[in-house]
Image (cartoon, rainbow, N blue to C red):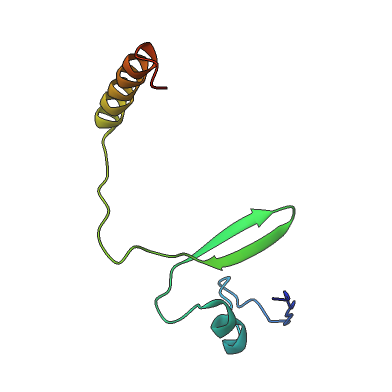
Length: 85
């Protein structure tokens, strides 16, 4: 599959907003209410769609993450002592 570069020149509106041409939006899957990520890289702005999960994802507290890492380190040590890892 060949990567074809598309280019459009658009005008930035007074408050910094811009309209991404429909063809470009369709080509990369940006639709109404799509979240996008804007990355500043080497003097350029890159706009890409963000994929979201169709279900809620659980957030973990710092304490829960620390507990998990502690347990993981303990279990890894046990497995290594048994020659499993």
